[in-house]
Amino acid sequence: MNNLAECFEETGKALDYPQFLADVLEGLSKEQKTLPCKYFYDEAGSNIFEQICELEEYYITRTELEILRSAGTEIADEMGEGVTIIEPGSGAGIKVQILLDALLHPRKFIPLEISLDALEASAQELKQKFPRLEIIPHRGDFTDHKDLGNLPLSSDQSERRLVFFPGSTIGNFSRAEAAEVLSNLRFLAGENGSVLLGADLIKDRQRLISAYDDSKGVTADFNKNLLVRINRELSADFDLDEGFEHQAIFNEELSRIEMHLVSTKDQVVRIDGQEITFARDETIHTENSHKYSAELFAEIAREAGLGITHQWTDAQQDFGLFLLKSGL
Ligand SMILES: C[S@@+](CC[C@H](N)C(=O)[O-])C[C@H]1O[C@@H](n2cnc3c(N)ncnc32)[C@H](O)[C@@H]1O
Image (cartoon, rainbow, N blue to C red; front, side):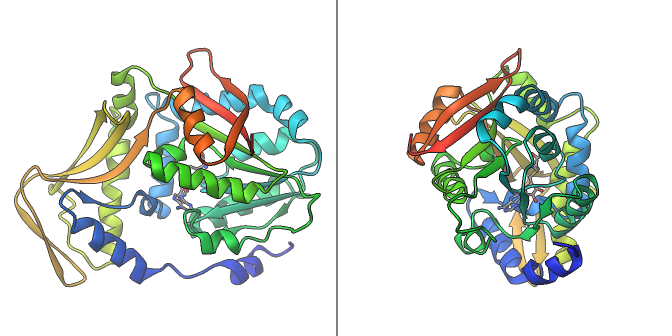
């Protein structure tokens, strides 16, 4: 692929305004109001997320990077030469660079991203850093079977695929949804391929809460940016100054961090002409980040038809990196 712009013309699609509006209105009409976390990542949201990754309290990114660096040779030996890498939710494409450096002559990289801004910026950067790699950026939703089916995958059985799913993105899904996402990853890997996935592990509750409610308020900005985006893109009038506060809690029973936006007063918000009523202290549940034991993760993977062939962790056992294969 020589011309990135041409590739986007072929694969890109305009932001799906009706779908975004429908998802927002559906989420806010539930008894426990929700908003889908996949809409966090507009240009501003992706930039704020990069700042979160640099925070002292947010151990996830630096720990996963450290594990990837030390496991690189083993992963490369296991995968062999000429691998095609597919990364659903590729974001800024930082972690994949470690993988690309470690692997033996990787052939193709297919980032699958919902955010066009993140996809464009990361594809440009990777093209410069890895000029011999074929990069095929694809705009799409990894939970949507139609988008997965449209990926430019070779039917050639000799193509060895590695599906890369870092960042504990799997933790954003409930157990049943996570099994479904894992079976999507298995489909992408094909019979001969593997899945390399990062998952955050259970740890001290206070460390978990601090990671999602940092002292500089960057995660709070990330959470509130969802309302900024809804105001801008869906003609809404959320009070961005004082209307909502960021909250991160640990739900012990479901072993997950929940992010919420708490209404500071009784208020009515208009979205595309529709009125949504908020009571004081009522919350919008914006994101879940499930935390796993290695055993629980293995069980969910098994439900999706995947078995663990290798697993790595850091000295503190904060984070797990798992290599999985179909049918084990
Ligand atoms: C937390 S970032 C992780 C980025 C990168 N994989 C990493 O670990 O550093 C999540 C990325 O996934 C993208 N994303 C979230 N939900 C998605 C979906 N359903 N389909 C495609 N991309 C999605 C977001 O736009 C964002 O760029």
